[in-house]
Image (cartoon, rainbow, N blue to C red):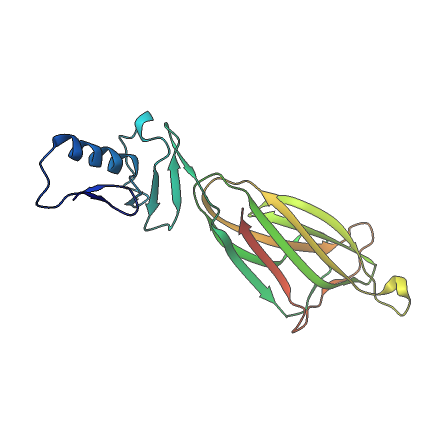
Length: 209
């Protein structure tokens, strides 16, 4: 007696069943409609797919990425998520009035055109002149800048100030260095210091969304 498979409903014959070509055609049509993921690498993606393959997916074993064919091109389905992190507990300072690197992280942005978030935490930022410039960079490109007010002294106004900021970037696929840079405010001078601690590190994290 013919039965159906659990997942796709394929016809399962016994040796007692009569041979019918239509049954095999039914099974092949069911299989063709449920192709699953095509396993390949980033350099061996299918090159002959067209409108008939719209909605089919591939999984790249070298990049661990999943793509969907939209009928004309592949589109990334999911973000890769965490791309890189760096932290430091070493105190640093500068009298320079041009940007100096405080911390950096090299990352690889995969193909797919997704956004990247860069998150920075700089605890205990101080300046003997009260003002420090901070900026987030991709290589030499400045993505964000802000002024941190934190001084050195006994009054409330002169106490150190932490700084936390994020910026979203949309770079093409490639290798980049994201960094937090800082300098003494040119209008005030002084020495700017970032003084992290064991439980309050200077940190940069890069995440793909």
